[in-house]
Length: 86
Image (cartoon, rainbow, N blue to C red):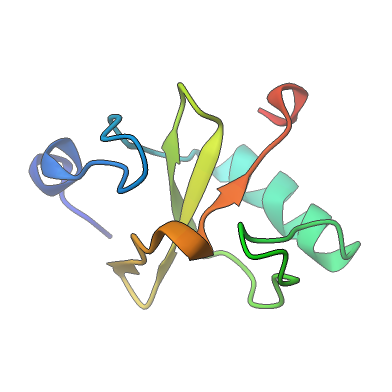
């Protein structure tokens, strides 16, 4: 998993906001929404790969997946979540 010092340095590529690691319950909710076909990225592409971890920009309710231990901080691959999700 990512070290906390690295997470502190990472910023959202869209607005420069701070990112935090999602907890296990939020990852389960994300994966449940993924299985239901409800998750889409900012390009409106359906998300099909389950989350092992993710980073959240809490001010924007925007999530970035972590795959193979590497955060994907590509703006178009971000997932904008409804406020009530988290």
